Amino acid sequence: MAIRDQSYTRYDGPLRERYSWAVIGWAGFRTYWRFWRTKLIFFAVWLVPLIFALLVIAEAALFDEAAALTAGEGLGHGGIRFYLGVQIYALALVFIANGCGIVSDDLRHRTVQLYFSKPITRVEYAAGKILTLFLMGTVTVLIPALLLVGLRTAFFLQSELLSEALVMHIQALGLAFLLVALMASIVIGLSSLTGRTGYAVLALLGLLFVPLIVQAILAIATDGSPWARMASVSGLFGLAADALLGGRDALPDEIPLVAPFAAIGALIAAGLAALRWRITNLQGIA
Amino acid sequence: MLFDLDNLQKNYGHFQALKGITLQLDAEAVGLLGPNGAGKSTLIKVLLGLLPFSGGRAEVLGMKVPDQARQIRQVVGYMPESDCYLPYMTAIDYVSFNAELCGLPRAQAFRRAHEVLYFVGLEEARYRKLGGFSTGMKQRAKLAQAIVHGPKLLFLDEPTNGLDPQGRDEMLELIADVRARGVHVVLSTHLLPDVERICESVIMLNQGELIHAGTIADLQSGKDELLEVRTHLTDDRFREILIGADFEIEADDDVLKIRLPQGKSTRDVLSLARDEDIQIRHFMPERLTLETAFLRLLDEAKEGSLER
Image 1 (spheres, each protein chain N blue to C red):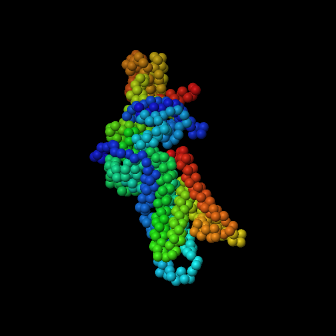
Image 2: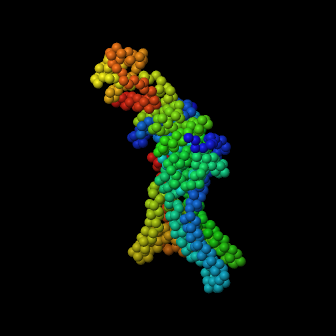
Image 3: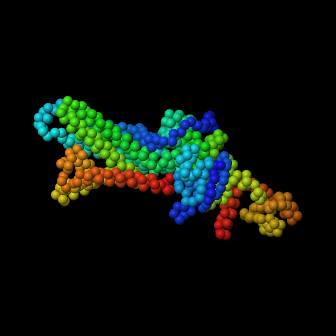
């Protein structure tokens, strides 16, 4: 029985041989974007930058009074540090809703075998998946950070603190980039280790919140040693923000300047190593 | 040349999944047959370059595996046996995404996805999520992603799995249509009538070994003819008479399955019955189907392995 009135026609147009990673990355982002929950969560996490934008406007309005109160002290970086600290949890929320299944969904639904039956390499697949998470992180953290930096820099245009503010804001953008890279690597690493998205979500929650408890216990046990902050992702990132924005003076003496960056680098490397392990061990799956 | 394999081997640890397959085959449509665990899916994955092989040499459409695996995958479509889609993707997204992965520019991929979804009969459902599809619709969506980029060769792994008779018939019709447009088809299935309908050649595997590669006609020709005979006798008298006259007999309850060796004909059986005054109540030449040929080859392979 015929189910169609059209015969098969072959495609004989052009075929591209590059940029499969971009196709995978963009398709992943587009798929997640279509969910209502994604749009709602993006709306929720954008409330934070919105509040900070109001604070920046208030800061500009009260600039002269604030300058008189803090004369000679220069610009503080507490606001930026706090903002990025909050963004860790905003990113976590976004990745819990969409992102923890970035690889595990492919394993569970066996789409990896379909990917690799196409003319793409495993490296391109990995790059595409990282790109999807990076695009999610860009919408959550980088774009708002860029807008806030632009707004704040604009207010400093007529000020003698312009160059100092510019340097600090570029560093803040660098930190925002580092934050996205860190969270994307953690999420893709956890997602690579399981075929169950729920487990990846639980692991991410555990990785963010259990070390906070450990950090508190260590801080109590060691009479508030600053090393305790190295135990959690947020503490670690806070140290990195202090080191980059405030320099050596902003870090406790006991902690070497490179320590938080080395630990963040190790976390990123661990996440990417888990992804590499997964895509090179697909026998029986693809 | 569709396939040129020379001593192709694949091991999983100490387990030999493919034990040195050597064949040269040039055909439009090939059935890949074998019992469970024969190595059919492994062979497909090795030929696609998805799995590295342990030894030997393989060429697909004149391209070497694994050196030219990327080029091979660009001209090959693969429809896996298992469901392999994200249930929250729509059919149009799924097919156009797969087209883009094969290298089609985005606009072309989208247009082409519409075309093939129309071809497989999913035009009404193309904006629905795959998770809500029936088995037949999922199979058609999988076929659509496999043909969207205009492959020269199509690997179909159990394409009629789980389909009702009408769905199976429609799927085979689609495959036949694709084949008629000059696309080579490799059909891996347990359903031998599907192979007989679509393919003119077969590759038969058993426990990782090749037991036959060639046309179905070759497989069916040159074999001894079979007869099914039942008589009015309740004892083995006619069986003994036939064995005495150099016929090979398999007894199946009261039915005698008689294999006619070269130089003997059905008339000789009838003459023997007439001479011995035996009344024949059932007399039917058995057609050598792909199924009987396949089972016979499997038996021979089993006997061969027992002798070894």
